[in-house]
Image 1 (cartoon, one colour):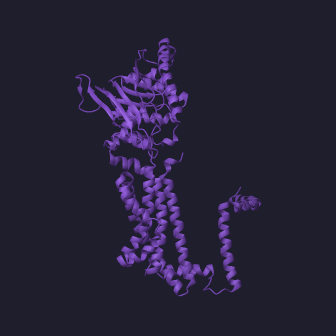
Image 2: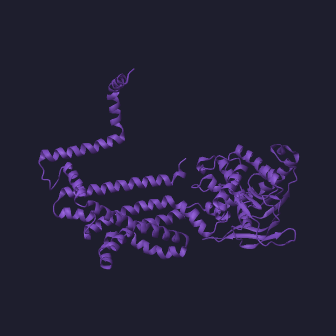
Image 3: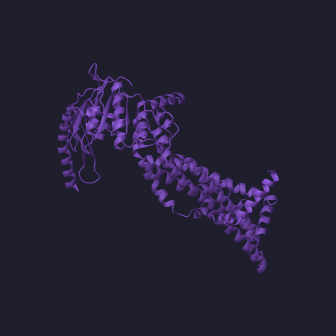
Length: 271
Length: 274
């Protein structure tokens, strides 16, 4: 994975969806945050708070309606010439069902015009990283959820992104598969020193993977707190028994519970 | 054991088992379906003989087959068949190319959609045979007319299904493709079109059916060669055997087209089968 030198900064970023009828929906408001190179940032918050929206804004897939997004060269603290390379792993996997595993992983390189033999070689290397060699010619439907998401991860890794974006990557998996993949991802993040932004519902997942956790409020989403996680690495399942883990967990849970209650009240009010 | 003994003992066991096994085989739905066809044909043949029907009203199936073979051998039915096939698939090919192209354009541009939508809404439900007189005035009765009528029959279901297929494609896949660096063209070619393939094929299926109907109808009206004109001619001279023979060719064509489409559908949607 490439060593990133560019930070992504959100400067009072907001996003309002124009409503066809009634009041427009404010998904995000006054978000100020920085995703630094080499850092793993987790975004956590109640459902519908705009976590994924923030991720897509950082990726450049959504344009904010308020505020600005900056790409900053860290060494000189000036605007970067171009945004860092980014690739996303999606909650719903979003694999192309008509393509084989190999062709799914290679599609980003195909878009970039990399010749077939080279992109297939690189796709095989990415599949090896997620232990899926031997499944190149299967179709996504023939794989389990956990395997599909490893294909999704390989598809992002093959792009050698400066920043890896993870949008609730384990949200559709069963609890056991999730645990195993979380540990594998923690290994990958620790050994490669990658920059990553992780959107998640799970406090454990955030604590296991992240250096920084952004806790968001219920809609309209804002940053309620920024928490630095200084748990020692490598982090494993054993880390969850660390008293420091427990303290952080309680603190984040406390922040989140209030927001979730507020979100539920707002939902009940609008229903 | 010699070979002869082996054969004899095998045939002995076979005959011992053959009755229940035969009945079981005959009871299979597929076999039963063909038996029904045979029963109808034999009943038809015998019925005509016993009732001494005038062959102008209802010829015997065996004579229809003789007439069919004759028409292929000496009557130039091959020419008619090829002419009809050429008209159907010629027009259909244009309809597929034009229909998919227009469908993609409509599905990806709201303006194009708005412009094309009213015309399609007006033309689609119109029975296309009603266009034959106008088309003859404009194009005459030759090749261009036949290709146009065939293409007109097929293009509407293809356009409509292409638009539908693209509109129903998973927005998550489009987002994933954009994330992986796809430009607009690549999204259309590598995400939207493959997503829409099952729907496009459903449209082609409908379209080809209409093309066949229209080409044969047009041939009956104005053609000099073609299955439709042959059929019409046979009716004019009260050659009932020939009329039936052409119908058999048309029915066989229908079966073939359906089976080929089934096979293509299966091979194209391999990824959907676990």
